[in-house]
Length: 178
Image (tube, rainbow, N blue to C red; front, top):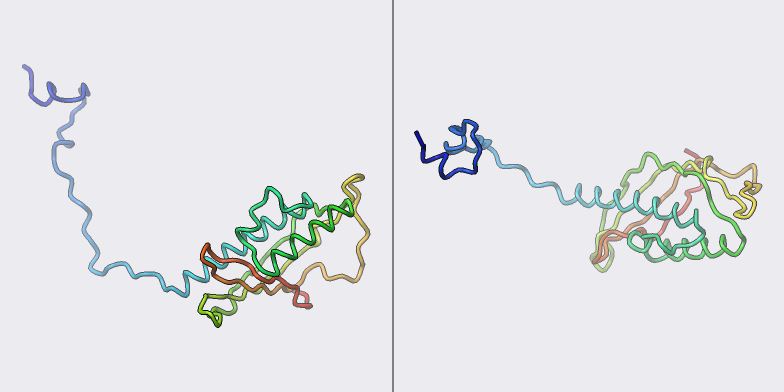
């Protein structure tokens, strides 16, 4: 006996009786989902930008150049100028940074607005550069660094929300250890 379902089907001979019944959607909750707090969203976006900034800065310092990096997506103002100048200096001195700086305890300590109304944020974090070594590119030997330098320090970073996203605009060592 030929059934209409198999004659019009896709050739699948499995039992498809459950495919012919309409599926009901799961019951909706009695309360609609709460929209995220705009301040929390801004903090999360600023922190993501900060992480990407450090990733791209590390790439730039490893190759002694910002070419081929996305640093301009995540940095602007003084922060971008500093990375560009530092990498030019590294290249002219035949040096690069190898290894990994460790960024931890990143916290948005302030969220506000600029005088022009753009969102801005301050992030405090702990930076450990003890595993990030300045090396001579030709010899791959570590350069001698001052023994009294801070290798684990508090870093304070200023960010602004620009039309194309959040940007690190200033990144500086606070002068204290963490």
